[in-house]
Picture 1 (cartoon, rainbow, N blue to C red):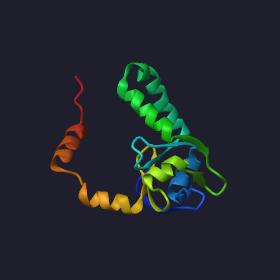
Picture 2 (cartoon, rainbow, N blue to C red):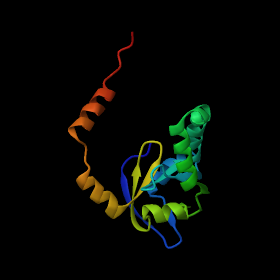
Picture 3 (tube, helix red, strand yellow):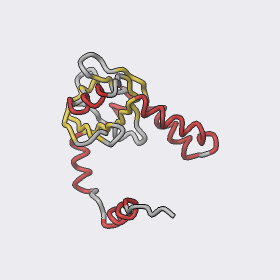
Length: 151
């Protein structure tokens, strides 16, 4: 599971060196291939390929029947690219996504359980300051996190 925030930089060729804390987790699972995409053009999602393949299997069942699924697949296909980590633990972010999400220079690499997200540092920090958890968000989370009683 990926956790926490690690500041990083995108180099002039569009490569991100994966933070060592995340690299160790990937090494433990022998993961070197990723699907890098976005569902909103604001951030890059770095999915270990085995995790992305789980998502694909779920969408195979519903994509032809569901407009939302088709839109999700359109977005993740448009921004997406399968990549392999190089021997210096770098991955190349898709050019179209780098441009749209302003992923150059300083970025934040945030662990999101089964994937990593890469955000433009300045944009992310500005959004955090103006778009924090609301009372309604907290109530919703509390409700979802309640232990389920089995019948």
